[in-house]
Structure formats: C-alpha cells, structure tokens
Image (tube, each protein chain N blue to C red):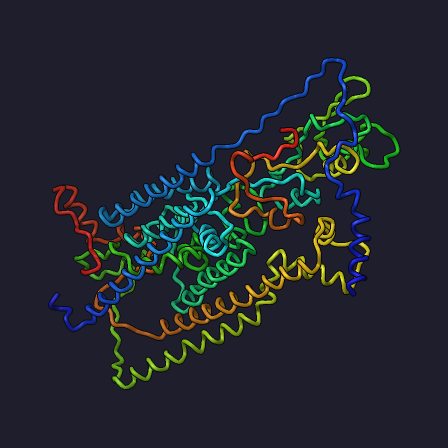
Length: 440
Length: 189
C-alpha cells in the first residue's frame, strides 16, 4: 500500500514538474540598445486605518444619539436620521465589511486560535454594541446596524405573525449563532459573512442567490417588521441576552392609558398587552411543572448533543482540509487519470498523505467535540423556547419585552400620552419625562 | 408602589439585578481577555494578498471573488520579463499561425497589450480594466517564460472581506492576510 502510494506521488511529481517549476530566469534580461526605459507602476494601498477609525467613532456616536433619542427624548426622528446615515455610510459606502454581526466569528477565532491576531477595530466593532446594549438596550439594532436600518426604512405595514410561528422562527438566530461559533472555532469558515443576504445589495453585485434572498427579505420586511433581525440575525440573538438586563432602557409612557396603539405599532412584537392568567395553579402542580422542566431541559440537551455528535462527520465537510483529505483518500481507493485540482496541487507542493491524515484527524476530533457542544446548546435553546411558550404570566400593564425590543422608537409617535407630554414639554421646556431605570 | 406589593415585582427586580451583574461581568471578562491578547500578540494583518511563490494559477480567483469582476488582477514585472517575441503568456500553445488573432491569444479578454521595442524585444502591458484575473497568461508565462506575469489582489478594488472567499478555495493556500507594508508582494520590488 505504502509503496504504491509512493509511486503514485513520484509519478505525480514527474507530471507536475513543469507546472510546479517556480519563476526562473529561462530568458536573460534583455540588453536594450534603443535606450528603452522600464515603465514604473505604483500600487496604491488605501488607508484602511483611517476609515476603520472613522467607522468606530461613527458607530459609537450613532449609538449615543439613538440612546439619547429613545430614552431621553422619546422621539423617532433622530433614529430615522441615523438609519439613513447608516444605510448610506456603513451600507453603501463602506459596503458592509467589517460588521458587528460578522465580528462575532473573529472574536471566537481569536480566543481559540492563538496565531490569529484580531485587529483592534474589529474587536471594538464587536464589543461597542454589546456595551451600549448593556447600558441602553438594543440601540445598535435600532438604526445603527445597516441591515436593521434598511429593513426599517422599507417597512410599510406590520402583519403580525402568530406567537407560535414567531417563537419557532425565533430559534433560527440561536442555531445560526451556534453554527457560526462552531465553524469559526474549527477555523473552517465564516458562515455569517458567506450567507449575508444584504451585502450583495450594498455592493450592488455578488452571489445571485444571496442577492435574491436579500431582495425577498426586503420585500417581506415591507409587510412584517424586520424578518432578518427577528428570525436570522445571530448578533441580535446575542444582544438580546444583554438587553434583557440593560440598565437604562426604553419604557412605556408612565401615564399609560392602555390604548393598545403602541402594541399595534411595534414592528417586532416587543410590547406585551396586559394579561390575566385565569388558571390558578395549585402549589403542588407548580412544583410538578418545575420538576418536569428540570427533567426536560437535560433530556433535550442530551438529545441535541447526541444528534450533534452523529452529525459531526457531515458538518466537518465545510472544512477545507477535511475536504481535501476525503478527496485524497477517495483518490487512493479509486485512482483517476485526471486528479482534482486540489489533490494535484497538494501533491505538487510536497504534501504527504500521512501528514494530511494527521491534520484531518485532529480537525475531525475538534469537530466531534464542538458539534457535541453545539448540539447540546441547540437542544437547550429549543427546550427553553418550548418552556417559554408554555408559561403564562399575569401582566397588569403593557410591558416591553426588552430582549425583543430593538429601540426603533416607532411606538413613541403612536402613544397619545407621549405626544401630549411632548407638546406640554415643548411649550414649557421643562419637566422632561424622567428616565425609567431598572428599579421602577 | 403600594399597589404592586402583591405582584412578584421584587423577585423580578432581584433576577434583573443578578442578570445585569452577570452581563456586566461577561463584557468585562471578554474585554479583559481581548486586551491581554492584544498586548501579547503582534499587530493584526489586514490586507488579503496572493503569495506569487505559492500561486498555481488554477483560475479560481476569477470565479470565486465576491465581486462581479474579481479584484485579482494580473501584474507584470517588467524587470523580470524576457521581452520575448514568442511569449508563453501572450500566445496560446500550439497555435497554427503566430498572429494576433483572438483565437491565438491566451488572454480571453484581450487585456495584454503588445508593443514592439527593438529587435527582437516586445513589451507587454496589462490593461487592468479588461483583466479578469483568470491567470491563464500567468500560467503560460510561468510554464514557458520567466514568470513575470503573476496574480495579485488589487487593494483599491478589494473589499477586504472579513473572510476572503477565494482564500477558502485556493488549493495552494496562497491567499492570506498581510500587513500594510506588504500589501503587494511584487516580484520586481
């Protein structure tokens, strides 16, 4: 077997000798007699550091403006202006790279791979929205993110999806996030960047499939609020964790008259109406339910982990080295006259099957571990979503689901009490509505 | 406040506080870890570039770039070029007549301009607005000539994607991130 392999490699090297031959001076440098001068070319390198600094400063400034607008001013107009600036600058001018959504992968990779150096701006682009979310809610999503802004700008009407449908679709961002981490951690691919539906629109060119998908999403977002943010965006899922516990946040107008207008206006169904749970549960039943959840959660996690482990072989196909190894292995079993380009180049560059096999085995082991963990996490997410659907809490007033609220400020224009406050405020220029904190 | 004493608002507030503390700690931990990394590691590279010594001219740069016309272009190192009349990057191999009819030329878009200098030398220039980065000429030049035609990522066209799509399909792993000072790997530099 081994000698056969060696022979194969030798033949390959012979065949590829001409192609592999490096740049060599086959022909001497010409002696010009006519006084010919070599032309000079200069290759300009754009000043990327300047632009990325502008990016970070603008990002922070726009999030500050949004936070001020939705928490202090309770007006949408500044958010709308920020949205337009974001679509024009971050979207069309900077054509979307690097974005906070994709930066998740760089951060994960930098923690896993010690040889990868993450630029500081990339980290800032990742962490600044998280910090702002922790303090002020999802002000990044409101209009600073060009994707959210674009969907918000084309939104005309809000057709509501049923609670069950939106809960089921709401699992997708988590799965997407978990897979993005899985593939970033195994150094396989940045799937968030690859399957970005809007970047093709911003760049006005690119993968036809993704542009079509982006176009369909935009059409959908005309009729229902922010489908990408709610049902796809992995960064939104991450931010929702932080906005759940944010310190200062958007609030229902204190003198609420329960008119329901804000609830109807909300594009992301983040305002929950008052609800009285008429079923009075006995304490014993409550304990039973809790126990059932406590069994259900680990069972789901375990099932997910098992599924993940079983799927790890096919999941690892995304990795380039694994793909190459499988091609090489297949080629060994069933040699073909014309090798695939990857295999040909691999051998021509002096790669050996043993070394590749060792590398592939290591990546495969990584995949096994990570996909088990990913499967367990997905199981947990599904279980928690199901539990959330089954829990019914009594609400005395309109409440904001801060995890879902993207701080777009659409509700302000609909709230009659808010408008009344603002009118009297504008007239007297005092007694501004105070910020409502966690404790209120 | 009195009205709500019966409702579980205090428990909710307690959970809120716990959550806030956890979230704050998480942010601090991630930032701290990133800061220590930034101190320990060398500065990050930003620009994508092709290492000409690894490139095998497989032609994937033309097709895989996210741009409609690839940001990868052919570059000509005049100081390496032999100024040959019979140029392996200009003419296709085994053509019947050696004339400049399109079917005899290597470049599918006619981006290589050929100009007579003096006997027997010809100067070759790449028209970058026509070049699509297919690398056919570079392959020919490397197989039969001095290898003065080679592929490079044009930095003013490149979008510097977070992950270069070509780098993920390059069979030779020739595309990687480089520092600003090495944004071009020129053969005649």
